[in-house]
Image (cartoon, helix red, strand yellow):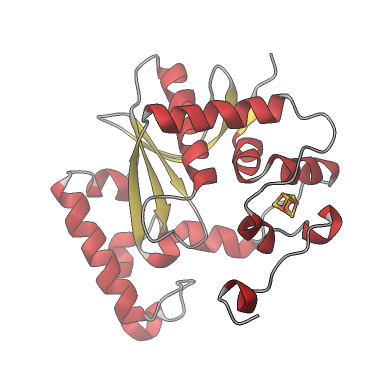
Length: 224
Ligand code: SF4
């Protein structure tokens, strides 16, 4: 059986219909800015020592002092869990892993215990991780577990432009979301129904093609 890519799973978790549109287009490489932001996740220790003026030239999304304070809090929290060093010095970087059902690149592989860490160039939610990232993280953990023939029960999501690192456990509910997304990818045959969560449509680049009328940010805030 063909293995599903992590990116297809992530898109299907956002909206299966979006995956239909993405598949009709030619795959494009991510812009270089994405690589620059992802690279921050491999430079945390250096960034903590960087002066404000130099830090302002990095692709961070917060003012330098706020960024450093956020990253310091992240370091303290992760040192308490004994994972800061592992996240700064992973045993492997950009590892292509192939599991039983899916395959893709894991940005960091941590050892003892074996865990995947995925690096997002975007903004984190207020708490936890975005649903497509949850599905991606479960997929990465399952693929690594298959490859190493060892259970993997946790994963990390990093949002380095915001100095945020989030841990997630592979709970029953998260695994169910992963299975739903996997099914959606495999069953994709013609355009699926539109998502009922129209807030997703507001930031979807296929809204025009999809024929969804999106509300503006102003109206979402109650001014429209
Ligand atoms: S506009 Fe909405 S329904 Fe249409 S593909 Fe995008 S997220 Fe899905």
